[in-house]
Image (tube, rainbow, N blue to C red; front, side, top):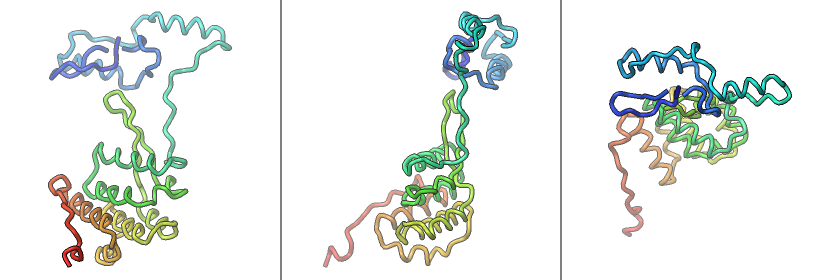
Length: 226
């Protein structure tokens, strides 16, 4: 039985493995995958996993288990960490962006767009504010990170060794993400870095649900024409 869910065109998935791949864990939804294919007429065979005879690999492992000292380790996926503590700044950024890519509100997407631009993810202790979640996606485990307390992010930024620009951007990010509201005028007035200003404009476009419809074109500063 191959539970690796191979592609079968418009009719979904076919071919189900249970024991033939020793390194693959057996997930709780494996029987559901078989049932669904059968009930949707994608397969004319219904299989009860619990009634299957032991395969060669299972029998081999059973023999090894007779001697506890030689028992092989179980193929179990280690649980994810609760928070991104100990992650590098770039690892935190990747986890945050992955969470947005798998589905999030425009406000959350805009907040992460700003937050990942700042130096906050690089600061010691910031990972404690990013909860880690694992998602099973097309038979692969996708690791995501999510800020669950934007007020804590603002408080962290207030004392972190980052530029004032990053504190202002964190305040706007928190506001867009559903945290404490920010005074947009005050927060943006100190962002005089053109690159950061562009990020702000992009975030507003994302927050309004039109981030994929706008393309910003940089032009020379007015002083260039003097």
